[in-house]
Image (cartoon, rainbow, N blue to C red):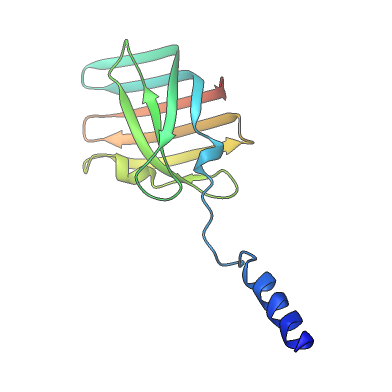
Length: 141
């Protein structure tokens, strides 16, 4: 009887450990207030624009597991928030889902550096022009 009880306790203990295949949610590491620095170059039929500005905004949790709502533009310009998925290494994916059908994503780098720094780079072609954007951010709170 004593051996059976010991075996049951061991089995209970082992069943409580997370498995290697169980999903983990990494997004909470990155939510909060961030200071962003945006550098953007656009060219097209209406001319060439070079925009550099800093803004403070909040990265929040998205609707699905490991999804983040990341502000890529803020006033005085149009407020734009993209929904991206973060993995255990801090890499971001699903950028293409945030673009219009006429946009052609040429190149991209999107990832967190630790839990307090973010780097965004993307180059997009449109039927009437192109856009290159680089965003760097540091976690404030």
